[in-house]
Image 1 (cartoon, rainbow, N blue to C red):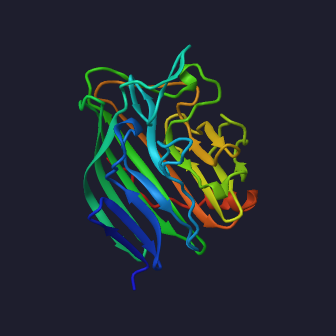
Image 2 (image 1 turned 30 degrees about the horizontal axis):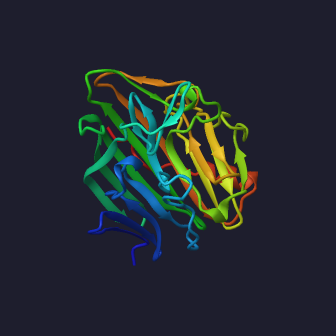
Length: 293
C-alpha cells in the first residue's frame, strides 16, 4: 500500500492520508460568509497519532480558519476576515472583505515519498475585481513520528497601482502584527509552551518558532529566501493558541503593479510535547518542495 494518499473530493476538499490516517484536510472551496473573507484553509490538521491541532471558526474570531494564508491589510482590502483596524479609530467593519478563489489544480501527485500539489488562485476585492493571481505549491512528507507541510506561494499584483501589505501594527495598533500564514490551535492546546530560535516575545525575529502542548507540537519555519528573513513572529498562548510568521509585523511591504512576491514556510506537526532541543530538530527538517515559478 502506498504510504501517502491524496483524495480530491467532490465537496471542495483535498484530504491527505499517511499510513491510513487523515492528517490534512485542505478546504479549497470555502462556503463562509463574505464578511469572513472566504479563502482556502487547512482544517482539520492532525498528528500521525490522530490528535487535532487546528480550530476553525471559533466563537471569539469566526474568521480564524485553522491554518490559512490571510492578509488583513492589502491596500484597502481585507483578506483576513472580520473588521479592519483603522488608524486612530480602532476596528471597524468596512465593506472591504475580499475572497480568494480556487481556480484549479495543475499538479496533484502522491507516492511513497509524499504528496505534491500545485494550485492556481485568484484574489478578488469585495466588488469582484481582481487584485492578485497566485500560484501555490503544497508538499507533504513525513518522518517517524511527525509530518511536514511545505507551503510556497507566488502572488502577482494584477491591478494598475501599488499595493501595501501591512498589519494592524503598521496602522498603529501595538503588538498586532499578524498577517500571512496563520495557525489557530484548538482549546486543548491553549497555555502551551513556546520555543524559538530568536526569542519568544511578540515581534521577535527568528528562523523558526514552535508551539508545544501536551498532545502535540506545531513548528513553523521561515524560509531563508523570504522577504525580511528572519521574520518577526506573532504568537499567542493565553487567550488562544496562535502562531504566525509575520513579515508585515511592523513595516509594510510595497508590491508594485505587475510585481510578484514570494513566500515559503514549513509547518511540522508532531505528536506530544517538545522541549527546545526537539523543537529545534523538527525545525531543521529538510524541505523537498520546488519553488513555484
